[in-house]
Structures are given as C-alpha cells and as structure tokens.
Amino acid sequence: MKRFGLLLAVASLCLASAMGRDVSPAEQELVVFQQKIDDAVVSADVVWLQGAYTDDFYFKHGTGHVDSKASWLANVKKSQGGFLSRTHLDVEVDLHGDIGITRGKLRVMRKEQSYLIDYVRVYVRRDGRWQLLSHRTVPSAPAA
Image (cartoon, rainbow, N blue to C red; front, top):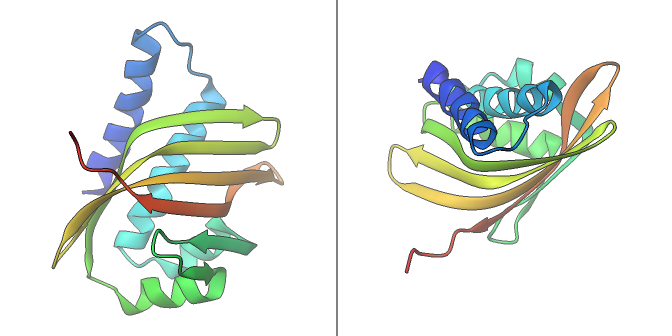
C-alpha cells in the first residue's frame, strides 16, 4: 500500500510535467515526503513521525478541532490499524526558499469509512530536511 501511495504522488507530478509545467526536484522531494508522512500515519510509525513534524506542529481539522504534535501523535498511536490508506490527489506545490506549501486532496480510507478532504500544508526545511509545520483540512465539496 505504501508503494502505491508514493507511485501515485510521483505520477501526479509527472502528469503536471507532461502538461507543460516543469516540476523541480525540490517539488518532487516534497511531494514524496508528504506521502511518506501519510504512509507513516497509516502504519502508526510514531517514532519516524516525531522527526517529520516540527515541535510546534499545528493541525486544524475540518471539524474545527486542533491538534498539537503531541496530541496528533497520540491519536495516530491510538488508532493503529484504523487507517487503511491516506493518498494525495491533485497536489500543487509552491516553494519559497525553505518554505513549502502544498494544496490538494487527501483520500482517507479507514476500516469504518472513507472520505476526501481538501488541505493546505506548510513545510519548513531545516538542516537540509523537510518538516511539516502546519496542516489544515476542510471536507471536500461533493461533486456536482
């Protein structure tokens, strides 16, 4: 399942490139890192996620609930096995030096339900590696 998510992330960037938009190696790196984060949430790899999030990580859910790094990682650990997959779609990347902003859709499949959310994420590159600083989601509007 992890490989599928990474392949889908890379494929979406390849599609953007094929449509006439140059995709930089830094954009590719960020999109792959982003999918690795969600694969680690699925596998409840809290140890790896500790380094993937900044200490001041902020997660505002579409419901209005806010998680800190500590509370989100506690939820990930508690829900171990509850996520079947978390796959990014329609990802757009804006890079501003050591700040990366991604927007897109996240298909979340859980044992009991699946849903699609729109998100905006802010990443910061520190000591040569990306970390997730902020994640904000809202439920996706139903297709017309």
